[in-house]
Image (spheres, helix red, strand yellow):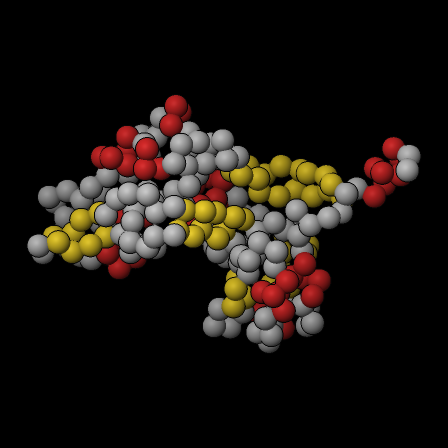
Length: 212
């Protein structure tokens, strides 16, 4: 096959790329994704992954945010090796509103002797993004999912919750909610802005047509 023919077979698109040489696997991008297109899992439930949600929702700032505290030399190391993680705790000015306790995505905040504490350690996390392969749109029998403008778009009125999109999803980010599916990337860029170490970016990629 000639070089020209190989180029003609190539497919290109823009997608969110994760640089694991920077990613600390904190899961903050998971928190901010509006469609839950980032699948963040842990082997051990009940251990803080340093996602910063507790600090962001605390009404009295009783938990310090990691904003600006993760040093560049810590990029690429797992979250529990960072100095900001060692310093994360619930301070004495906590008003026990229980917001952090209720909303922690990994249930890492415990009640000990009538006070809230953050349980720390290695939760053995893993993470994967929607690959924007558009297979979910291709198999949708009703056209509820469409690949347009380099993003997946949903028409909830057409969705019958048949689950075909979930079955075909190679990254297993797709899931069914009460009325329509979630887990598809809409290329909003919120995860990129939220990443504390700049591990996410939107880049154009080209390949031979296989699923990436």
